[in-house]
Length: 376
Ligand code: SF4
Image (cartoon, rainbow, N blue to C red; front, side, top):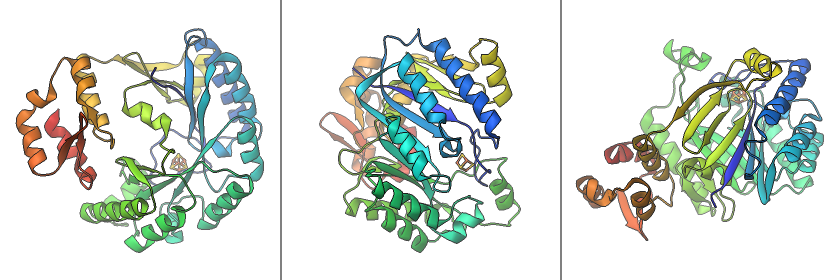
C-alpha cells in the first residue's frame, strides 16, 4: 500500500527573510494559542473522513515551527495521536530555524515522537545571511549541531540555497563541507526570485546582483559533487541522502501518493483531488470557530493532468518513471507515443532506460525542465 502523509503548517516567523513568499506571519503568543485551537478544530472536523487511514509520515513545516511557545507541539501531537492512526514506522519531521532552536524545544519534539529534524541552514556565510536578512548566524547552526550530538539526534536534514546574492563557490563549498559529515540528508534549492518580495525589488533596482544562471548551475553541480563523494545519493534533483535516509514524506509528493494538509495555506491531494486551505490567517481562524473547514480551492485532476504530473515528478527522481506503471495507469506506451524524442534524448545521453525505468542521465538533472518538456 502507498504511503499517506500528513502535513501541518505553522505560519509564524519572527521576521520575514528577503527572498520569502511563503505564508508566514509575525504574531504573538495569543495568536499562536488561537492557531493551536483552530488546528485542533480542523482535526476534529476531518478525523471521521480519515479514520480508516494509517498515516505513514508527518511533516510539520512553516513558517518557523521552532518559534512557537513551549508546549505547543505536546498539545498538538496529543490531539493528532488521539484522532488519527499512524504507522509503527512513522517518519515524523519537524522544520527548525537554528536561531530559535533550544535544548528544551528539541526535548519536547523527541517526547512527541519526532524522529527527523529539518534545519533551515541556507548558508554558513555571515555576509550572505546578512544580505538576505535571515535571522540566524553561522554560530546558531554550530550550536544546533552541538545540541543534536548531545541529544543523540541522528536523522537531520539541512536545507541550503544556491544562487543567493554575494554567494561565491568558496562560500557554498564551505557550507557543504561543514554539513556533509553532520547530516544524513541535504536539500539544495536554487534561489527563486519571487515577485513582490524585498529581494525582488532590490535586484530589480540594481541594489543587489544575483549570480547568473550558468554560475548557479555550476555551483549546483559542484555542490552535488562534494555530496556524492561523501556517500550521498542524489535521489531527486534537489535532494541528497545517505543510504537509508531518503525522505519518505517528500517521496509521496513525487510518486502521486495521497497527503492531507492541516493549517493555514496547507495543500492536500487525496484520491485525485487537490485542495488547499485559505492563506488568510483571520479567515482560517474564523471559519473554524464557526465549525466550517477553511478550504479555499479544490480541483479534481483530469487524466491528462495526472499524466503530465506523473512525467514531471517521476523524472525528477533518480529512480525515474516506471514504463510499466505508466502504461497501466494511462493506457499509453510512452516509448511509442514519444518515440522520436526519447530516441534522440538517449542518443544525446540525456535520457536512459534501465530496468524498465526511463530516467534522466546523471549529470543532466539540472537540465531536467527542458528534457521533461519534450516528453509532455
Ligand atoms: S524563516 Fe522560512 S518561512 Fe520564515 S520568512 Fe524566512 S524563509 Fe520565509
